[in-house]
Image (cartoon, rainbow, N blue to C red; front, side):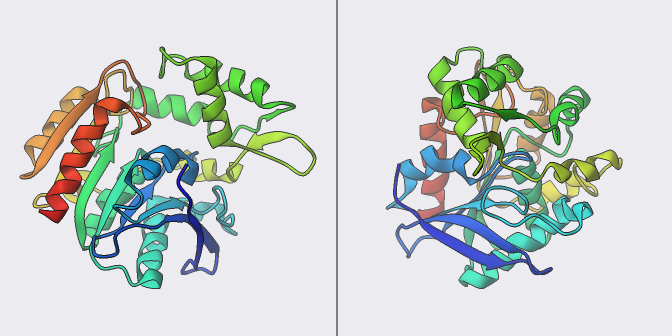
Length: 285
C-alpha cells in the first residue's frame, strides 16, 4: 500500500471530515475518489497504490464514514449535502480542475457536482447511473443501517461472504477477509463493527432520497467531459440498457463491463487497468 497523509477539512455545517491524501504529480489535476453508501476511503487503497506518484489521489470519507465525523442531523445524509462537503474540500485545498471517481453513491455525487458546475477534468462512474434498478435498491435498503458485531476478523469475513457471494462469485476467503477489513473497524472493546454511522439509513425511508432530482439532466453536465462508465456484468443497480443510454448521451464516454462481478466492481480488477489509464491519458493529452 502506498503511503498517504491524513487530510481533514470542515463541512459547511461544522463537521470534521477526513480523506486519505496520496501524493502525486502536482502539475496534474488531482483525483478525488468518492465511495459508496456504506463504504469508506479504504475501498480505494489498491487503486490509489497503482496511481499514486503519478497522480495525487484524495480518497474521501463521506460524513459518518471512516475518519469523518457523524452528522448531528441524520437527514443530512443525502447527496446534496455530500456535494457541499466535497465542494468544501476543493475550496479548502485550493483545487481547480480535478478528476473524480465515484462508486455507487459516489457516482451520484459525481453527477450532481457536474450539474453544479464543478470543473471536472474527467469522470469515472462506477456501477451507477441516473436510473437505479428497483431490485438492487431494495437489496441495499434491506441491509444498510443494520448493526452487526463480530469477535474476530474471520467471523466478519464469513458474514460478508454470506451476503455478497452473488456479487463476487469467484472470491476466496482472503478476498472476503480484505473486504471485511475495508468495511469494518475494531473497537476499543475488541469487537469488530461496521465503520459507518448506522443513521445513514434514515433518509432512505423517504422516496427519492437515494438519488435526487432529474439525474439524467445531471449526467448531461458531463457531455463534454471524458467519462468512463464501469458496469458489473452481474449488477442489480445499473442495467446494461441504462449504461448504454448513458454512453450514447455523452460525447466523450466509454463503457467497460466487468464480467462476473455484481455491484460494484472494486476498480482493482485487471480488466479495468487499461480503461482507467486511457481515461487519465485524456486528461494530460
